[in-house]
Amino acid sequence: TALFWGSAILLLLYIFEFIISYSVQYYGHIMSASIEHDMRNDLFSHIETLSFRYFDNEKTGQLLSRITSDVTEVSELAFRGPNVVLCAVIMTGTIVAMLIMNWTLAILIGGLLIGKAFHTVKINRKMKDAFRKNRVKAGEVSARAEESLSGIRLIKAFAMEDFERKRFCSKSREL
Image (cartoon, rainbow, N blue to C red; front, side, top):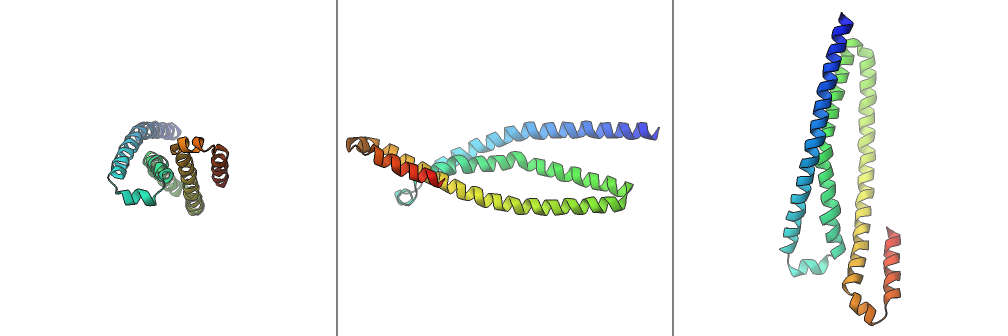
């Protein structure tokens, strides 16, 4: 009978976990899409209020990168953030259950989980730096393309298409 009750409790916990996971995924997606939309609109409205001096010092491609890529990153955080909390709750529950069953094994597994968490944070920081540098480079490519395309009539008038294509290709290679 203990096996039956243990199995029933485990089944109920799995059903509960499924409902929570589904809710987090469904409502998290809706919430992140709404946040992304609102942030993009607010950012665009703010950019429109800036002075001419600001636009003299900033490249349009970098601004486009902020409106698109950076807002998407924040939206992803809003969507994935609750999963981190859910995983933490599940891991804590697992460690508590293991402590009840076999405390030495629980301490060993807990230590490994903590080590893996520190490793993940370290790797994540390196990835963020690489992604940040990549977004700057992508903004430079967008800026180069925007400058070329906004002056396309002048470029065509002076037959400078090859020159502009080479400038764009060199900037694109840096990406």
